[in-house]
Length: 162
Length: 162
Image 1 (spheres, chains in turn red, brown):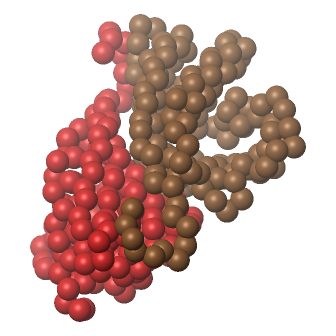
Image 2 (tube, helix red, strand yellow; image 1 turned 60 degrees about the vertical axis):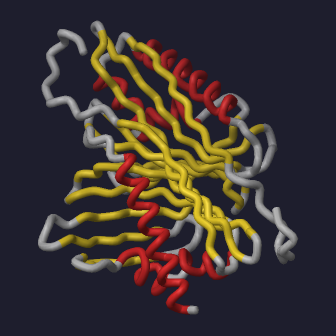
């Protein structure tokens, strides 16, 4: 920093990182794509969770369309997710950006690419997230672990459907 | 790839990269922030260019607000940019995502962080772009060079204003 007087407190510098997660599924690319494209399916495996109260879930799956999710865990503060779909190639790829925040303060912004490739008789799913943490916390490792857990939750949901 | 029959042609795999550009300016952080926040100023130094026809420029500078720019170079195809502001800290930071496309086909999606830090009697501007190229071209180097040229254009506009 410098000796210059600054009227406002300085925001934390943004921290940039990225991570990559890959997982194979026995289901077809079309089944996997549907799990990310269908509003009720997305709500079931990705939004709802034990101990999580969902206050809003809007989901407009088209390029330029938005998702809004508002939820809270065990009486904690409301977390808001705002996403925009940036690219959709049926059964092959979904690219979206999203920010997460508490109240009107964003704490992260992300660019996520999910790709579905035929693999053996199923699908190899590739998940790439490029991330800017805005509140000074370097939680990229936690975000990666959260991504892995979500894919396990998705696998259970798909297996349950048979 | 596999032996599985695929009905549709495969999209090119997305290519992920990032780049960082830094430049010092003699003007204050408030002047620099204004150059990215004010619609007419942005139009002047960032959107308009010699040989470029601007067909639309909408700019709603607030968190969750969008920019739409549609333009073409020398009778070429119309290029469309769709941006969303993800974080704004006055005089300090602007985070936005954007996709670029020709017609209804996006060819890139980006997450960009611009930070303004007091430096000597002016400003050190940091520009970080995290990028997914969607059409198989690895043009991250070209995007970085384009970013540098834009900052030079900004410097000329600020110097011109005195």
